[in-house]
Length: 285
Ligand code: PAF
Image 1 (cartoon, rainbow, N blue to C red):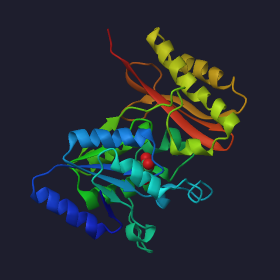
Image 2: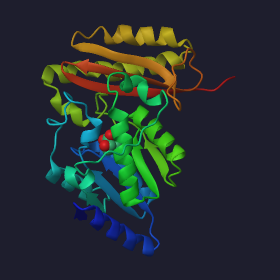
Image 3: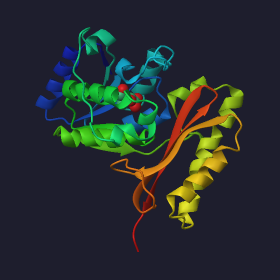
């Protein structure tokens, strides 16, 4: 497995692969990898001849006061995990390699899409995500790129960016990976102390409740969301940021659960903000 810190090295290696007629998959990450990331890399390994994983804590997607400085990092451990799941090249640039000091060009979706859900409390987040992912696409020029369904809004936004900017890259969304007890895997789970780790189970329990209610026929978004909020409120350590039902493609709020609806939540457990979601697929009779 090759490790590159420079854009030019990535370009050289990918160029060589493409000359050999090999297909390339990209898995963008911020490191501190867990089984959720491993499942993306394994999926990329199955679908592509060569796999590039980027490990880069992207400063432009963090607002002042968010956890940029404390975001967990362990590059050696990341490399050990990546060796075992089919990664061929790790791209691990310095911030200065990705952003010139006077960089002033951003990629931003100017619709309501990035303003919904997480965008309400993180107004610059998706501009930073789109900008860095666009840069990674330009550097690696992959055939396919892999993102987790856990960051459902991010996945929808990247699909939209790819469409709007005519990137010839296929975006593959991969299912949420959960701990045995249900908690969605996240690098931020390491922030939780023992009591918070137990309390964090309220997110997945609420997702499972929501899925059950939809399965049993609930089609009214307000009633569904009220039941889910009531469940979250049973956990004293949980503070709801949002629980919303939106169109799974446009992120526009919906009143009825029909078609493809993303039911998503962000909840603080202590100081740690966690997200979880499910997609309700309800076909008209
Ligand atoms: O999901 C993430 O880890 C990040 O938002 C991404 C896509 C790697 C961009 O920095």
